[in-house]
Length: 199
Image (cartoon, rainbow, N blue to C red; front, side, top):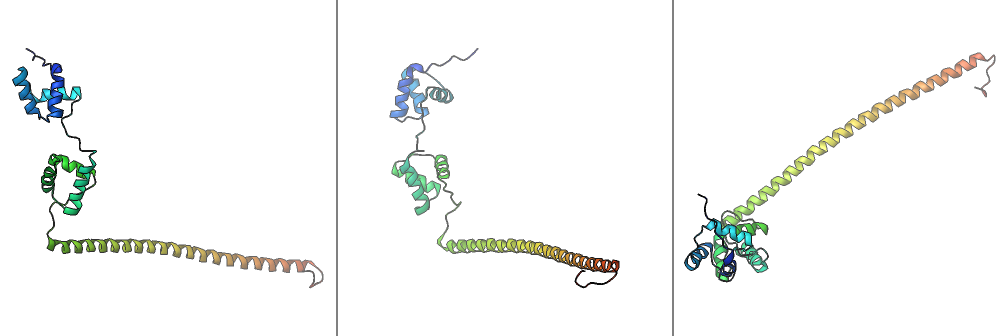
């Protein structure tokens, strides 16, 4: 036998008031519906109904500049962990869950270390940073050296090619000169007499 459909439409305004004005949570809304209207339902049914009618139970902090500014301040200046940040935010009047805080922090681009550093660990961290930077600089120098060697090989190849082309050019010039001389000798032999002004 199919389950009976629960119609919550008559109580929409009342449920909206409980959630938006009185800030009741789902279990409290379900308990009120049961006690006042004798309506028994599951949390899943209530969630679907709220989604259908557009009633939001989550507090919208995404556009809250004060909360974003406070999270940023606690991250950079106080360097709190997420748990400490939640405690301070709760005392400031911001009620959010840890997952919400983590999502907001990541949306703001604030990455957190797994554990807070002790004062004596700061020096070690600074040394690690400097070593990492030195290693990066060394890698850059190594890459530049490789590129320089490749460029040097290319220059050597071009120089060799130029030298061989110059040698070929010299050889051609010499052969041309020899051919011209031979041509001149042949022309002189054809004539009966030698005229130095007429080659």
